[in-house]
Amino acid sequence: MMLQALIFDIDGTFANTEEAHRCAFNEAFQKHGLSWHWDEGEYSELLRTTGGKERLAAYIDRLDLPPEEKQALRAQIRAIHATKTDLYTHKVSSGAVPLREGVKRLIEEARGAGVALAIATTTTLPNIDALVKTNLGSDALSFFSVIGAGDQVPRKKPAPDIYQWVLRQLALPVVNCIAIEDSAHGLAAAKGAGLFTLVTPSYWTQNEDFSSADWVLPSLSALSGLAELERRLELRSQQPPVLP
Ligand code: XBP
Ligand code: MG
Image (cartoon, rainbow, N blue to C red):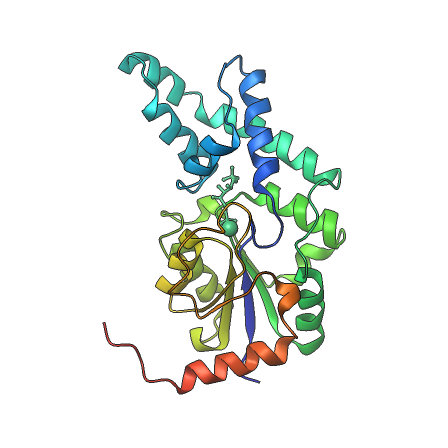
């Protein structure tokens, strides 16, 4: 079998998590005595910056405040983000964030077929832990041979760093692996690492440009199974390399 590993993105791909992130950010602002409130429109803009801490910094940069006040707010980013992560993991652990359609079935099929599973995400390990254990069981982190999360690499998506790191840990040829993503940033990161990339757009990314994707599906429930992924991967391997 050509297909040896599936590398899953988390936010938007594994589950529609961004509404829970948005609400957790807003609750964290209240707990920190900040009058900020990110509505859907503003959050959709802010999602152009990957990474919760980087997103907070981008928001602060845009505020019309004296430099010393902005600097004081930047100094609070780690504390605000830690509060937000606690609030988010509590929401996820309560069962409020189910997996997207088709995710569990594909994971089970891959495990049955001996196809390795990995994660390459911008979010944090506590968030992955809560989402995976709540939805797949307390031992489910062990289903994944490699888990690549946010701060483990110097540059977040759309840089390819997290996918390159995961591929090094997997020690598998890139041609035998498939990335599954939901966003243009994630697609750029996976393609930057040379991966065949299947995109299942999410609510927040549905209007983004996926023209460079190898395959786009509305969700993994539209996938007939591993055999279809295998066929697409083989087809791509038979195509002449795209010259730069
Ligand atoms: C999406 C992100 C993350 C989440 C928020 O990650 O950019 O920053 O929006 O999570 P991916 P944190 O799609 O790569 O999974 O606040 O933990 O960053
Ligand atoms: Mg994503």
